[in-house]
Image 1 (cartoon, helix red, strand yellow):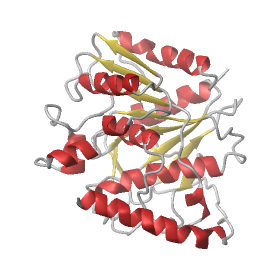
Image 2 (image 1 turned 180 degrees about the horizontal axis):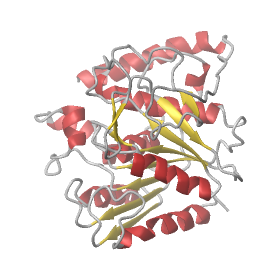
Image 3 (image 1 turned 180 degrees about the vertical axis):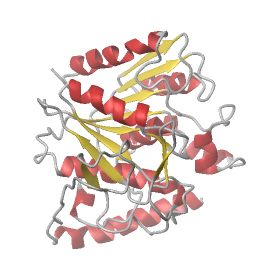
Image 4 (image 1 turned 135 degrees about the vertical axis):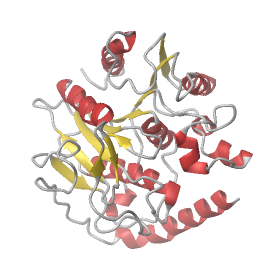
Length: 328
């Protein structure tokens, strides 16, 4: 009931604010390069980057100090949500927003952010790596914060499509683990109002052309409730309705964009049933879906774990995108 009341309030605010925003000029947006406060590996000083918000994120709060990067590539203390732009030498008009996982406790920025971006640019795709806020870092909007950032990111990429030579109908998402839950949820809930509009970009649709999800957390319902994603979003002892409300399969419907799913059968973090559940929901609603389940590879294999068949998934994904005319 609390969730529904909050969403009603946000929808009402959006409805009331839209006429006012329509009379405003779009804000100027400077794409920066140079010192950002992020560790060099997460966001190199020479890279182009786009702060998601002009000023503080919605409703305030958040961590103090600069972002921190662990030796294993886990990014935390994200006070300024940002898009890191990776442009190919020969862009083909397609774009993909990349979200690394980490159970909404951190972002695995190295193998689930930077390396996937390099792969995408090798295909001619402009990649936008999303450095999103984490619910446990004292944001007043808590669990809504990463979804606000993801929706804002889609709007900014679409709103600046001409600047980057992007076809607005060819913007997709690539999400890993919790990042798969984040981007997959946004893909199937494009009308979800997660924050009050702040400028003209918030009138831009959040629709995506397709979603590629690697070992995503899909369901928060028992018996798959032992993920960090579930704990960070709804706690250890949520209501049955909360588990349903924050599970991806709840919202799959006819007309949703196609899904490419990949996972390993020996995944001990997010059971392989996650992708099976999403695949079933898609098929029940006539949504285009393909699922690859490899025998081994565990969780967090990124672009592929050496010595396992997971190393072939990028090539399978490239062919899948080609068949759907996302790339040539």
